Amino acid sequence: MGVAALAKRRQENSQIGAANEMSPRMLPLKSDIIFKMVFGDTRNNSSLRSFLAAALNIPEAELEEIEVIDTHLERDHPDDKLGILDVRVLTASGRRIDVEIQLYEYALMPERITFYTCKNLTSQITSGQDYGDIRLSITIVILDFNLLKDSPSYHHIFRLYDKLNNVQFTDVR
Image 1: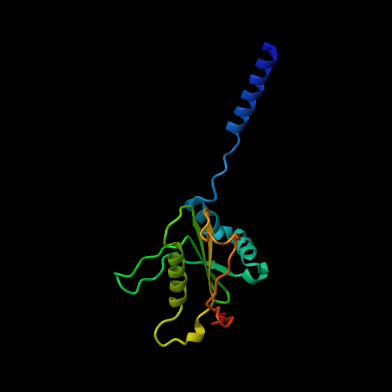
Image 2: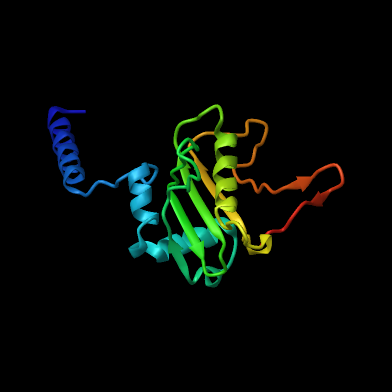
C-alpha cells in the first residue's frame, strides 16, 4: 500500500473516530442506577410492563395497572436484616414482583433471593388478617454470571414443590 493510500485510510479512520465521539454514548442498562431509572420510575411504566410480560410470559393486559412501590423491605425490629430491592411492583391483583439485577457473584445469592421473596410474602399481612389475603410473590433476578453451574439454562422457575411425590405445595395467587 502506497503512502497516499495510507494517508487516505488514516484520514477516513480519524473521521470515523470523530463521528463516534460526537454520537451519544449508551449508558449500560446493567448499571444498578440506570436499571432503576429505566424500570423503577413510574414515567417508564410501559417499558416495565413490557419487560415483565416478556419475562413472565404473560399478556401485557394482566399488567395494565401496576404500581412501583417502596423498595425497602419492612423491618419489624431494629435488629432485623435490611433489604433494599432494585425495583418492586404491586399489580392490581395484589401480586408483588421484585426485579433484581446483580453483576457480581456472591456465595450466598440463593439465600439472599429466598430472603427477599419471603419478606415480600410475609409483609403482605399483619395480625388478624386472613392467610388467604396473601398474593403471589414473584422475584425476577437478572444475573451477569451463571448462578446454577449444573444447569445449561439461563431461565428458571422455582416453586415450593415436593419432588418426591411430584406435587406443588401451594399455588398462592
